[in-house]
Image 1 (tube, rainbow, N blue to C red):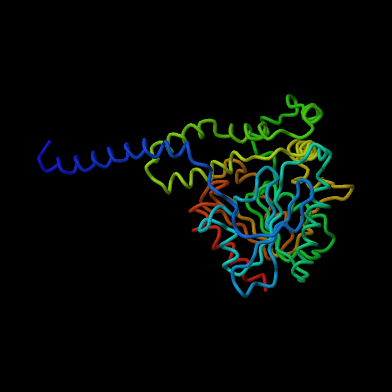
Image 2 (cartoon, one colour):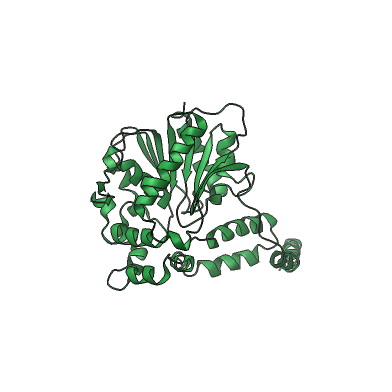
Amino acid sequence: MSEADQPGLLDRARVEFDRALQRNIKGFGYFLSSAPVLGASAKDRLIQRGTMNLYHYRPLVDEVYRVPLLLVMATTNRGYIFDMVPGQSLVEYLLKAGFDVFMLDWDAPRADERDLGLADYVLDFIPACIDRVIEETGEPDVTVVGYCMGGVLSTIWAGLQEAPGPLQNLVCFTTPIDFSKMEMFQAWADRRFFDVDRLVETFGNCPADYLYTAFDMLRPGARVASNIRLYDNMWNDEFVKSFRMFDRWTADMLPLAGEYFRETTKALMWDNRLYHGTLEVAGRRVDLSRITVPFLHVTAQHDHIVPSAASAPLIEMVGSTDKEAVELKGGHVSLVAGGNAIRRLWPKLASWLSERST
């Protein structure tokens, strides 16, 4: 080794030694400290009814767009993925951009809610929230933004309407439509081996642990790899902060109402009725061509939960003339939260909505 190389080698060794020391020191703090506070944007709860909650976020600017915005969260997870911490909150971003933001969020269904079915979600919960948003704002129109299964429920609700009614715009993030293309979930829910009736009859509601394991097994090595990355970056406070936020949200999975889980397994996963146009809710057929309002569907390039093949057909099935499909870099979660979302999805969403919310 030449003498010229030695200073650089010593500098790198010094950096690595310092990082190793910080890993040990901060590692103790990591295990002893409490989880970060998430979802802290100021809000008022307008409806609390069993598993359903409707929140209204307090405005951050004096002038707001006329059309209010209702976020519909996926039924398996909590809505604070949209409101992590200041500076990393989609809700905060939209409020500062001048939107009047509401959220349909979920709690774990109670034991006496085991009989809640698909009709309860799309013919009761969503309409009740929309009616309350209209009452609160005095505006006749609402934009609905659904994430994952929240998008599925939103499109089913919209596809049941004879006319647009109060729906002004519809936005979906990573929303599956062709469930036959969700190959790993298809394998686990294979009707030849998976007795969904027995599961519901045994447990009442589908346990959160069952769902968490199913999602975790999509990438069996991911949790080990993420823990290794955490150790390697324990010296980096920003990395640790971000890791803890997303790790907490991922693990904070909700059980599903038993009948709702049974119905969605059979009608969507097994029979693929939404894609084939044969889905009925309370005797009414869901027709996505009835959706004629401006429509935006955003998908993630590296989504391992809802692959592009599962979500792509939605844009053609919707009857809107003003419609747009956008595929952005990122995964199922990083599409909506974190640095990737801040750079890509959030500006796109705010720009699209601003032209259609006056």
